[in-house]
Length: 253
Ligand code: PEP
Image (cartoon, helix red, strand yellow):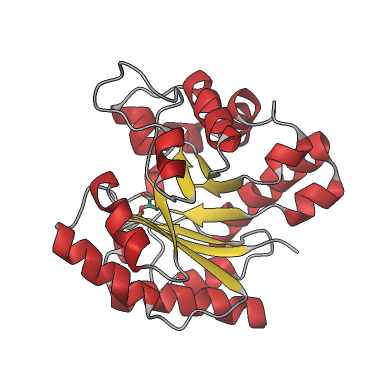
């Protein structure tokens, strides 16, 4: 059975005190055993959050594929592992857009994360013009082919995918359930082509893009949506706890 996951991407937000306080609140939420909750705080606070969390998993929003060396400003997967960090976001659209991360670099990051036993959350998704010109399925498939589908079946089984249409991230405009389900079903069919039915059925594919307490239940109830990667709504404990509860509710019903 595939894992159901609700994950919060805090991006470059919060002071250290605010991050620690939010981490405590998330950790105190009523999280059923049917669901996994991850938080991705800013890099400076991952160790603080790790020290506080008992059952919420802590990940980094980024890391570099080389282990050590002259890469000023970067933090490696190897260093994350040493600090007890369990997961890493790879391929978030903001990294692709503002830091020019391409499919080839993301492939290296994915390989490095897996080599160090860190769970990769690999993000894919199309910009607005690609949604509008109708080539969004091909666009997302290319992202997966060029960065992910070289993995062995064993390694691929450790990856969480997150479909995040760029036009829905931070815009308040979410994908409709039909749009989300169409893409998620397509992603699962490509996984099946590549790795077979069993792995496809057991792969977690999250939705991200303006998920909030008002729309999460419908999105999470889609057959091929296994939870969410949440940006803005993960910064408020009250909103995030509704999303965690929606995830749990959807699984139980
Ligand atoms: C994200 O950045 O991964 C995200 C989904 O953001 P938001 O929920 O704010 O759209």
